Length: 368
Ligand SMILES: N[C@@H](CCC(=O)N[C@@H](CS)C(=O)NCC(=O)O)C(=O)O
Image (cartoon, rainbow, N blue to C red; front, side):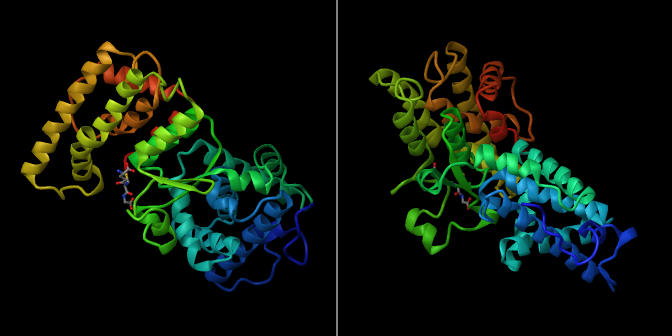
């Protein structure tokens, strides 16, 4: 289906270009921003529909989110909007119109900034720009890249989509990252929904019905809801990877589980205090408490270093669920803005994790 021309005369792209505006007088910036947001959201709405996608795909699929962002951003650039005020306003308004909820537009725009480092988002964004240019050159051009992406990645019917695993949780959460690592390692398709901290959601009645702790992650597998990150990792591993991620030999499994429980009870509590004081809420922890937490963290890291000196992975010679559970905390430790002792075996382990399927896109995010 060709793109629909949004303006009544000439190419709709003329409305974008300030030099060739033919869509009527735009008396002030606000009019212009509104017009551009209108054009972008109408264009994207038509494109998404033509590719068999829904507006929900924007929040569940990073590539699509990136595509919309890229197209809006390219419009703002060609229209020479001031990037930090008019551009942001236009994209907020555009996203709001696109999802049919104006109040959520600016929020969606802010979320898009969190995904800038995500390779899927970046790829989508660059194709959004390419398709915009094709459309600028020819108002009947097809959204070729979007259509191809939809064909390759979104071909499941709705029954498959309903059966797909669903995960709630923001990507900068250490506990969510464990589950994401596990899902990618197992190459399981899933949908992820932002939740927690700035995204909210966790206090809504619907979410509390799933997870009364009001925290993330939460996994939905059909009619089964599960929370507690390490238990989710165990569940997925035992179901999809017995003998590999989830060792069937009782002692091998106990070895992996030992490190998972240790992560929750020893490694994470002090690391979280240090992380909060250095990154999330700088200076929020008293001096004495902080010093104690630093010391405990280093002691725990000594234990990890010793384990990884004698063993390739935490569970033994093979990658297991324990490595999914520990790697995000190790990433966090290694990237804290603080001096720490050289930890060659921890570093070797961390580099080996980064070479696993889909690990880089999860771990290589700035600490926030
Ligand atoms: N023991 C739980 C802890 C879950 C937890 O504390 N999650 C944090 C993020 S790592 C959270 O939801 N914080 C509140 C928020 O993000 O709004 C687990 O391992 O899943």
